[in-house]
Length: 356
Image 1 (cartoon, rainbow, N blue to C red):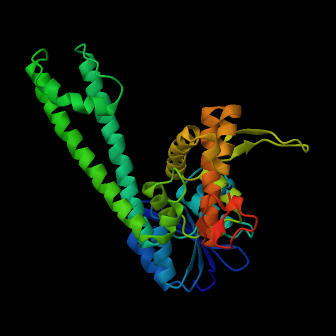
Image 2 (image 1 turned 45 degrees about the vertical axis):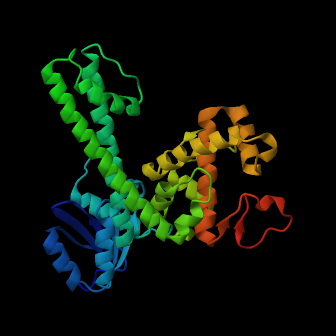
Image 3 (image 1 turned 30 degrees about the vertical axis):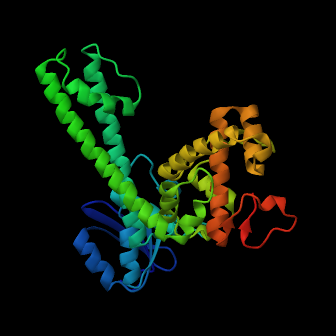
C-alpha cells in the first residue's frame, strides 16, 4: 500500500475501478470497489496523485480526494482514450489503467476542479435547458395533433400558446381533443413557470458576480451567458490566450495540415456545447445591432462585423462573432479588466480596458 504514488480511477455509478502504480510507474495494485469501499480505501492511502476522467461525478470526487490530502487531476475523456491498450476490449480495469497512464504524462492538460457553488449554478442551467427541450417537444406534439384535424396555427411557439385557449373552446374539435389540449396547456404553463424561475435564479447569481457583470458589457452577451461562463470557467488563466479559450469552446476550424500547407475546415464543435450555443445565440443579436446601426455610428467591431457579413454570409459571420466574443471574454476574465468597445479610438489605451 505504501508503494502507491499514482492512482488511475474509472468512475461509474455503482462501482469504481482503480489502478495504482509506484514511483517508477509499475502497476502494483488493481481492484474494483463499490462506492463506500473506495472511500474507505482512499482514506487509508498515503497522499497520492489521483487521475480521474472528466464526467458528472468527477468534480465531487476530486474535491473529496483533495480534502483527504490527495492530489486529484481531472482529464478530458478524449485525452485518456489513446492510452487504452486494447481499443476493442473496453472494461473498467482497462479504463483505470488508461487513466493512470494518461495522468503520468508530463504534457497532459488537466481540467480545473469546479467548486460546489459553480456546480450548483450549473445545475440551474442544466434544468433550464432540459425544461426548454421538454417545452419544445410538447409544443411539437400539440402541433402534430392539431395538424391531424386540419388545424395549422403557424410555426411560432408564441402564436400556438396564444391560440390554445381559443382551441380549447372550438366546437369543431372533438370533446376528447379539447380536454387533451386543456391538459397540454396546463403543462405548458407549468414548464414556462419553471423556465422563468430558473432564469430569475441565474440572473440573480450573475448580478452578484463582478466578473459576470463585466462580461455583460459586451453586446449580445446577457446574464444567462455570463452566468454560465463564470460558473463553468474556474480560472481563465489556465488558458494561454483567447485563441486557446475559443478552441476549448469549439469555435475554431478543424485543421488537416501537412507538408507546410494549412488546410482549415468546419469548426471543431469540441468542448462545452452549452457555452458554444449561448455564444452563437448572442452573436445573432450582435449582428442585428451592427446591421441596423447607421454606418457613421458603428464601432470598430461593428464595422468589422458588417464587412465580414458582406463577404462570408450569415452563418459564418455568427461563428466569427462568437469566436470574437470568446476571446474578449477570456481577456476580461484572465486579466480582470473591463470591456470598452471604444478603446481603439484612443492612441494610448488605459491599462484597465480591453481593446477590441
